[in-house]
Length: 195
Image (tube, rainbow, N blue to C red; front, side):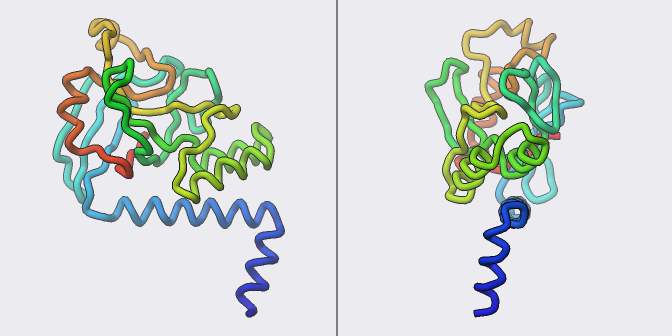
């Protein structure tokens, strides 16, 4: 009974509720990374993507392109930046304009909470995002934080541009051949760390 009363008090206070949701989301992410399933590490400084199982790299892809606006802790709609953080694959589109598209669960609880604290989004939008994530659904993609973030191929894009420039609107891009080689390690739920 006492735990229920404490929970109700926390839930009624919006900041406490937001912190509780953020903490829960971080714990779930951290525990799933500890499993022995392969996960992806994208190093934006070296433009590489590594597949890691346990603590051992099992594949590495070079010349990965990121957003033409660079990277950011807090991505905003249309800023063409790649957000840093921990994500998971939410959907797979094998018929994408970019050959294959592995959609990530952006914005995450951490990104939404940070944006709410800074006044970038209001509490209503924060709750829409957090409720979707906590219910294992795709978060809203049309907020001031942007959306449609993922890992994809080139499609019919120019290989020379891909090799020489960061050209995406925030996504992580590989060549179509690299996406084919990466495909066996990606499924819905695969963890992705962008740093």
